[in-house]
Length: 173
Image (cartoon, rainbow, N blue to C red):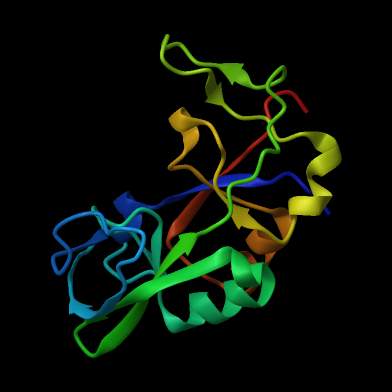
């Protein structure tokens, strides 16, 4: 099995995004309960299992995505509440841990003076230990990036989930 972790992002072009219900980024202690949202479809014209919302830091999961990914990543997924899309209840999920697994020497440097890293390279020796994890990185310039281990990506694919695009967190393998 290829153990390279991946940065994940919402596939907004294909699956669209959620809006409404939330008018600001939530505080750390705030939990939402069935706030009503709307969906702007993407080019596929069908809803994904994992949505993006412009004010929500990480992702919004349907029941299938929550069950599938929680069975692998478990406590890494912090639930911040629920949203309601019509009759469907969705779960607001945050990748809770921040892990220091980046090999700075092999990462791409940033082109901006305020940032140290432009693209991370996850240390080869640490890849297996994060294979069942979903996390953030400790660098301010990458703090909103969500990284998933190989087993999380495998569970996503095995369940036939939609809504994410993956980019391997490796520069020079």
